[in-house]
Image (cartoon, rainbow, N blue to C red; front, side):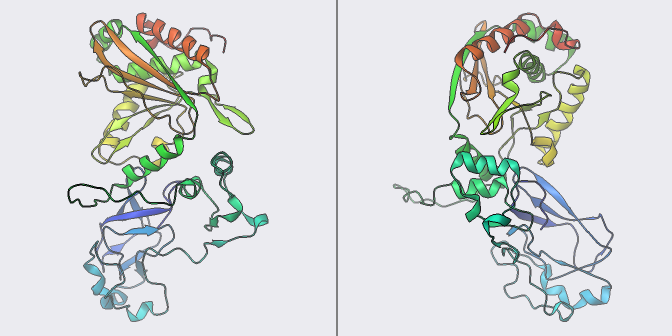
Length: 388
């Protein structure tokens, strides 16, 4: 099981796209795996023939666990046909005979790699972000179980979660249904985000001029809102910052994540350099990202590293105001409700460690100016940066 993102520690094997005995070339897609954000392909790392036993479809496996084998000849796969009937309810190796050509090799299964072990304090490896997160959440990195490539943010979030389980649900009988990887990751990230001190500020603004531009140009209203957010962030640089114990990390480019509702859960593909690129380019990117999000095919580079978030529920006429949990790594998120008469509620959620109430008020004032005069949203930005 490869690590398909920086935060991935396990993956759910959705299905095998090749069968035992099939010839494969290096780079061929052999299986689909559900990560913390999307369903992705696993590619063969060697030419040969797929051999079993194969990990069961639907099973959750640790990064580094064996999920199958590649044999040098088709003859070597003949004794491994027992692995061709995976079942999510049965552990991958249960009742499966290990072929003679695999004797002595570790069987596939959701086991922690032997390289994962407690390490001495002087030898602990962790990414800078993981160390900052551990410091913020009160986790001792020295006590972590390190994977071969070190301690990552996902392990920090898992360590910070309460170990007590909620009390049994009272009332009628119920059944437990496993959440998708996307929803499980969302729950973990939102729990971690609650450690961020936040405040919310709401402005009632008119959308009529922006709606007219959207209708005249055929541009998505959500994309135009993201563009307005990006130009406003550019004018108020603190909103492009992230708090760290060492100081503010002020990014040099505005990358706006836009929340998308999918059948698997909420994801937020990122529009890169949303303040500096032509709107037509952003429109092409947004269409592609939106289709990938709905299809569950986002890559890690598609949803990581946002500096600002936008959540638009304006299509639901009953929603007149709402706020959202601020994702880690951003200073603010803007929530857009449905129009109520001539006005729409825009709620700005802010990291109070980075910005204060007056900063948020100035941000909303500039944002309101872009809504009232959307011309600069279509052109390359010319507006001078405001004081932060």
